Amino acid sequence: MSTTMTKPADVKRNWYVLDAAGKPLGHVAAKAAHLLRGKHKPSFTPHVDCGDHVIIINCAEAVLTGNKKTQKFYRWHTGWIGGLKEIRYDKLMAERPELAMKLAVNGMLPHNTLGRKALTRLRVYAGAEHRHAAQNPESCEL
Image (tube, helix red, strand yellow):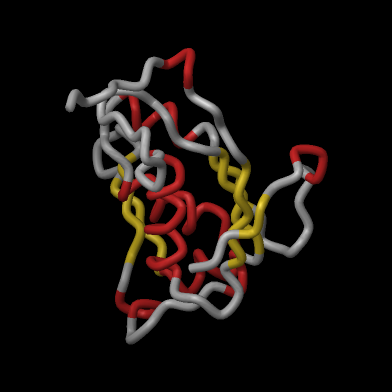
């Protein structure tokens, strides 16, 4: 029996909606990364971008377990001398919950061209409304 390798032209992409309300941020991000990568498909091929489109709604209602809200920081560097910036997750979740979710998903994707391409298929919304009803997305359970 031979192994079949999916070609990029043969990839069929579906749309999925994940509801993050009341669920841990990391669990939602892990499920989204799994769908974006295409690992749920029987035709998964590691070197081909065969993932689906993912819409995450209610990011503002995602929870951080333990003391992560006060002890976890998002840090970045501006590129200038002394330009290390940081923001605590309680403030980040209050001001930009979409960024917190996108950062979590990005950390779970491969850090190469496949991961960067997969991240373009992620849509993140703080509330329950999204503008992708025309694509008929399927609801996905965690």
